[in-house]
Length: 178
Ligand code: FE
Ligand code: FE
Image (cartoon, rainbow, N blue to C red; front, top):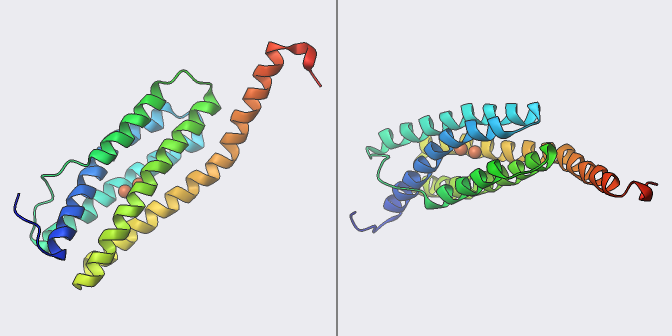
């Protein structure tokens, strides 16, 4: 790979990383949806899958405009986040506990993306790439919205997981029932 000597090179490198990250996510999100017990959570993952395909398309559009190729980089961070997500999927856990863990994994992914898109949007602005900046801002907003929806979903699901825990305790020692 050629030497990175200016902000435009940095911009392209970071975009390649995001492009690969989004592609990995397109493959991972259906598995997250399948693993979710809550229909709302599963639907949320499905919806974000559709958005994520749009993120891939937006990046392709930007690469076209920049006359650069999007390929050639592997996002090791996303690979790791998805690996952790797969561990969660395979975990022996009650329904709500599993959903709570899926949300935690998904929010790590969203925060990673938010950081990445924040950086490239800043570069695009500095470089005067206004079209790219607008496209990146749209994706950034969708990532933030998704993160917020996950926080909302966690509100209910974490409470359910907590209740499941109480029920387990009561089953274990019924004499301690209040
Ligand atoms: Fe995305
Ligand atoms: Fe995302």
